[in-house]
Image: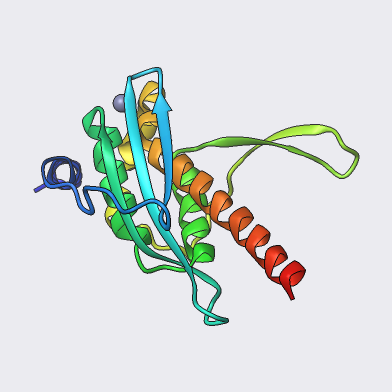
Length: 177
Ligand code: ZN
C-alpha cells in the first residue's frame, strides 16, 4: 500500500467512524461553533477544560464534536479530537500550531516597530502529528485548507474562551475573598 493510499484510508476511516461524536452538557463544557463558508462545513465543539490544580495547568478533559461537512473537514475534526483529548491546553495549542505549520498557514503579526508582517507558522519538530500527517496532502489544494483547519481554529477559540472564563472566575474569587 502506498503512503498516499494509507493516508486516504485514515481520512476515510475518521470520516466514516468519527471519534468523539456527540455533545456535552454546556455549561460546564464550552460550546463553540465554526463555519467555513467556502465549502459549507460546520463544526460544533463541546470542550470540557478543567484545572488540574498545578499539574500542568488546564487540561482538555473531554471533547465532543457535532456538525456536518465534507470529508476533509469532518475527518480533520475527528483526528483533532482524538489528538487533544486528555492533553493540557498548552499541548493542545502546540498541536494547533504544528497542524497550521503543516497546512502552510501564514499569520499576520506586528514586528518590534509595530509594522505588520506576514509569516508562515514555523514547524516544531518536537510535536508529533501521528495520524494527522494523513492530511498533509491537503496543502496541495489551497481551497481545501480551510476545510482542514476549521476544527483547529474552533478549538483555539474554545481554549481562548476557557482561559478568559477562568480569568473571570479567579477574579471573582479574589473579589469574594
Ligand atoms: Zn470542506
